[in-house]
Length: 330
Image 1 (cartoon, rainbow, N blue to C red):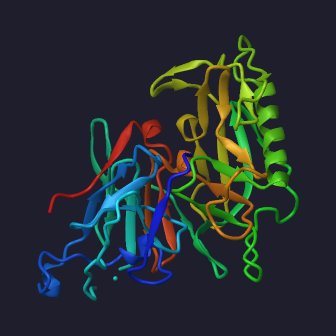
Image 2: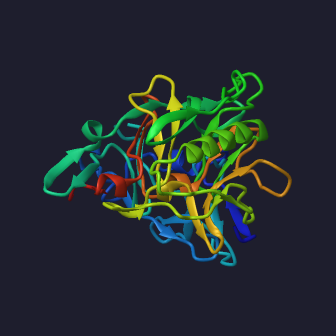
């Protein structure tokens, strides 16, 4: 990611952007509670930083940062920002992200559209998982207990050290955290080694006898690269590659990573967009997480956070559902 200067703005100290905005917007500054509407804003990708931003009223763009402690605005603009006007509402602490489409703050229904079918509410269409918080660091963590890779043959489970993905509430270390400000997933070395072995094993088993997918030299910053001779799917139109599953404790389903949520096409072949934590790989969050899920993994997903119930509904890559996410008209 380019080294872009940013300017910190403190409308409310130590409050992450999405918590700051998880209030109810109003149609006017003094409208009664019955007139309050959810705050719905389009997401725009900044061309210089590849970060998603939103614009509130007349303020400059604010970076959408799930793991941030501050509200940020991009330079070189020196414009100041006023506090986002919010009223004490009915603060259901809910927000939704449909990447790359929109962000919705407040208690609003979100729908998934399917070909030849009517709109379905996300609570009926998506699985959900508990979300965890780190007392030592901001952000939202997933209760991941294991990682597996599947490519038609029985899935291969990564041989992780015991408790490798656990979040230590005392020290704030470990855990799997979501980030919208780092381009690719990052794994601690012990986790990455186990994952790489599982991915290679799934490739070696193969899905079709006529394929000959094999490892090729790494393409920086990626370490796992393959010759790209993967079969092609017609629906959705993409390459047939292994599916990575994050196995979640207490969830209704595992979190899948399909093609576009981890594969990167390069001139030398297809590379896995998951990096090993090492010098030179910047960390987007404080502390030492076991794994960071980056923007590549969250893109083309619908995510709905309920911070009262501490639950997260997740769609998985929407193109594999041959669907998209929509909001109701107000």
